[in-house]
Image (cartoon, rainbow, N blue to C red):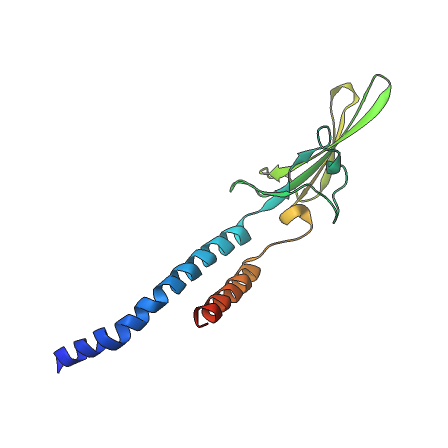
Length: 152
C-alpha cells in the first residue's frame, strides 16, 4: 500500500510541482525586488551650484530620486543664502537626512551673513511615497502575467 502511494506521488504530483518551480522562482525574485524598492527611502539629491534643476523640483524635473542609505530618517532641502561681491546668491541642496532634526523647517544663521533654511520631511521625495502595498500589487500582477503566459 505504501509503495503504491509513493509511486502515485512520484508519477502524478512530483512532475506538476517541478513544472511550477520556474514560476515560483520568478515570483520569489519579483517579491524580493518589489519589497526592497518599496521599503527603501528615496530622496532627491542635487546641488543647484552644479545642477540648476535643483532649484525647483516639479513634475517635469529631471533630477532623479536616489535610494537613501539605510540609516536615513527622511529627506532634506537646504536653502543657502549668502552675499559676496555685493550680490546675494541662493543655492539649494537636496539630500537624504539621517539626523534627528524635527520634521519641519528651521532657520540658522552662520558667519559672514550666511543664512540656511533647513526643511526636513519623512516621505519619498518629500511629496510621494512608495509602499509595500504598491509593491505587493505589482508582485501580484507580475505573477498573474507569468501564469497567463506560461499556459499559452
